[in-house]
Length: 275
Image (cartoon, rainbow, N blue to C red):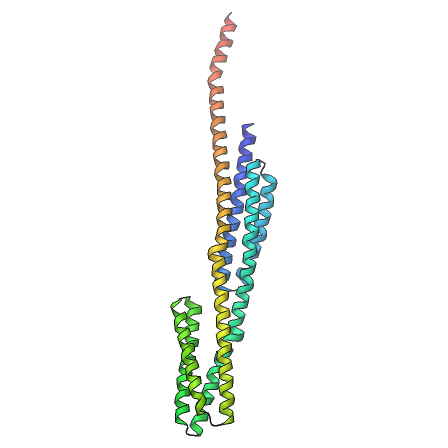
């Protein structure tokens, strides 16, 4: 009987530990995906999630104690919530990276190209005021992109205030340029730059929103479910280990008692032999 109890406790400990190990591997891969946005870490996250579901199913079949079965069901629900949030994070991360490469960067490059053309137009007609304002606007456009790049790379919120200030200064330069436009091309460029500035700002806000939502999910929401999974699996591991130890101690005591009784029984047999 003790042997069966010890085997059952050992199986339960193994099943719970397998869930925790696979979950920790999945968390590591998920965080790597958020940092890199690469296919490899996303694929690994999904691979570990499938393995984890298999481990949970194995635990549901292999754990027989009712209170422990309840813990496994709680782990399963917490994992489903965790992975549902990860799916949202994945969508946001892909959108975020696509916006940067396909929208934000090209829009910033186009702003600089238009301002370079503005400088040439102003120089061709000796419009010194427009030329000076074009250089000024270009400086602000460069700084908007530089601070945005630093914010995306370093995630230091101090750059957010600098970006907002440069957007204001850039718009101010464009407003002042308006009264010094002499050619049709200059007017076309001015309209286009005003639109590009608005577009860049909207894309920037969308990217920042996605980053904040990813951070909220990864740092606030998903850790709640992680805590449940780790707490429950560790409880299962601890209780199984304690039970295994208790059964082992009990078995050893019974063996020792049986061994102590052997000389007594042997002595009785000897006495009876003499009689």
